[in-house]
Length: 224
Image 1 (tube, helix red, strand yellow):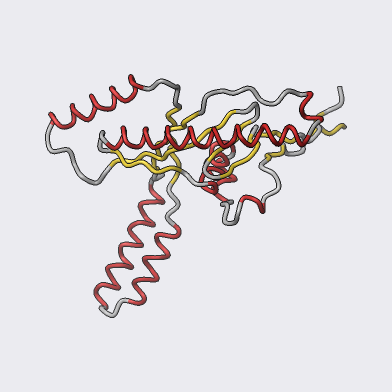
Image 2 (cartoon, one colour):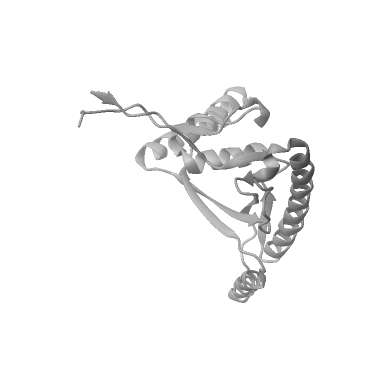
């Protein structure tokens, strides 16, 4: 019997800082979460106008964007626990009973079917810029002096582009919010390993985590 080697698979993320994801190869990304508004559409004419505005936004883009739609199971554990806790502190007995009944209803609904929530994201890139040559890597001072201005320029460009995208989508009746560092890390984890993301959430500063890696499980195979 021989064991398969355990290998670490990297996501190609160099750093996440100030709402910016630095990828291998000198690429930078920001992520916007997009959601609808609670206000319903008044009529078909308004709906057509919003759709036309969204089409104009897409046609007017001078750079590529990625639209990500994620559907994930809803975790109702905290919601039900909050209902039960609130019901125990209600002075009115009837309201407390209603809260308890509602919690039971939600529990039963979750057992009967899988409840999904959909989240929508727009990934905004920077212009591709060449990284420092391999020879410059042997000169740490020079490399650091050239890398930091490139990062600053990428942050400024992403801020401008994100503000512009948010303004354009806002005209379409959509709410836009830029993801912060922990939210970016959680999103990447959820896309890479959904099972682990449901059990593990980042609750600290990203500096407290030394690596974002997923390792293959050990497996055995018959000798050839």
